[in-house]
Length: 339
Image (cartoon, rainbow, N blue to C red; front, side, top):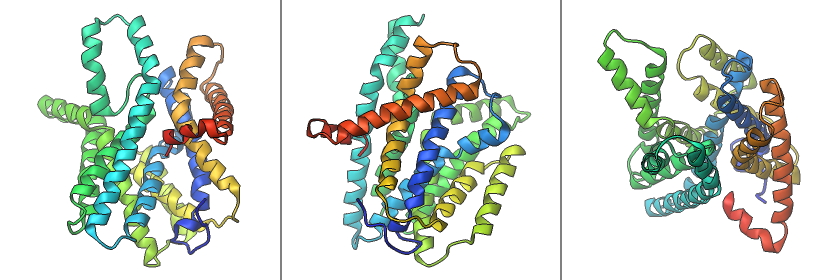
């Protein structure tokens, strides 16, 4: 376990970040329960806003941790090697989880009406473009990490590379947001924007959050840590942007949550490592749990909050079992699925 002593800007101080990660893992479950059951209006607006901060927050935490490692390296070659190594680990995890979710994809093809040739063409396209397959929605996070860590490794020696990558990703986000929320008089422009979003979202917007986490590390290192009142104001701004349907609520809210974690000081305890591992297992296994509940439970549970709560409970039980197995020598290979 890492040494958790340190200043507000140090990795060690960020114990609260792991607690929030666990909360956000449950938020991801809620997002996908909403998506699978098609009940977009089942949650309250405030809850919908909150759960949408989950994956941006994960990216920001990852960016912060990777940035902390890179900033301690003396040469560009060291940084490039570290970025390629991390990108390779994310790729390995991505492929392993694609294999784990492959039986669900095969089941969906078996019960579907499309011809086999169309399914075989569609599968590699959805993996490469969107970083996911049937019920494997969470995997786009890993695929986005692979893409942007590789890109960053190629331009690590460039001045302000993080800012440039974040800016390009932010423009991609803005283009996709425009396609969803703005209707132009030109039908051609509307069609082009929809195809732009189809080809770039969600994978290519991950860089905005990842680089933001790295930049936050730099900001904290020079002693700039916004007071709690400013952080709370940012949370309110994020929610306001969401309600009035303006861009950037996930970015502003994700940053605010991370800065909130930077202000919370928790005593050293194995509980925070438990929170971190539990959040990762919930994140990666919950779609299997949701799939099995749909197959065997169906609509027996009424109400989207009840369904989300039930999936979360089963995920905690399954994840706790896996974490218990991890402690046994014969099951140490499970570490490779989350590290």
